[in-house]
Length: 69
Image 1 (cartoon, rainbow, N blue to C red):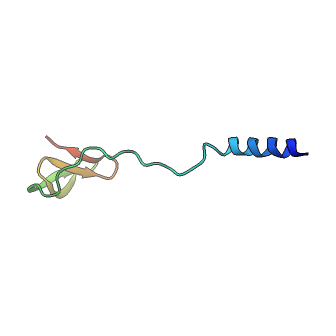
Image 2 (spheres, rainbow, N blue to C red; image 1 turned 60 degrees about the horizontal axis):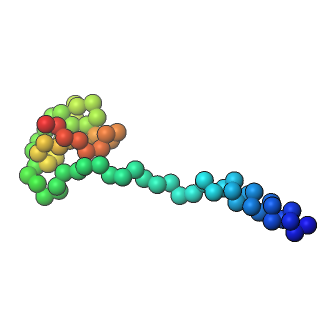
Image 3 (cartoon, rainbow, N blue to C red; image 1 turned 180 degrees about the horizontal axis):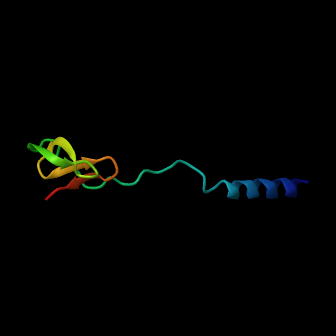
């Protein structure tokens, strides 16, 4: 009886080992928040969004921060 319980416990533990807390992807490069700001018309994911962001950078919901130049 004890061997069956131990086997069942080990089997269920190994089954759920891969399930856990989701880990976020590491953040990519981002601009310095204290750098000079520029008004751009080519921000966003598709390039048609007006943004007031650090010069040389744009932000899109899908892409995150990316350099424009």
